[in-house]
Image: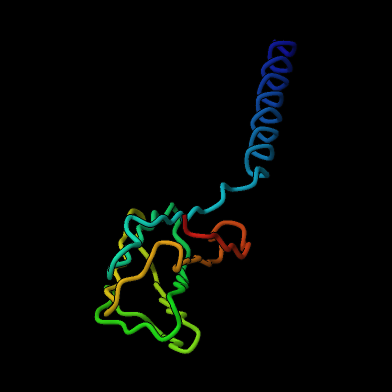
Length: 138
């Protein structure tokens, strides 16, 4: 009977050690990085359209910086832009608390632009590891 209690105790002890080791192993794995991807769906003529895909968990804020020819006149922006440095042709959006999934940024200019005269980047703080990320829009 004493031998059986010792065996049961040792089995329970071994299971506890195994579970503890598994907990330490899996809890020490780095979390997957938050991903925000962006690409153009249109960049010629008077309209510029970007599509953003926001991963889970989403960052707190996404900064989108769109370069257009200096002096370009903006007719409409959805969502509204935060700032426009007309002399430098730099338009900036601050997207606060973005939802997971897809979102679109649309910009309507007064005059047509060629695909080679625009560029954009996105910037955000990774929600999982705190790394500041900068990605070019393709």
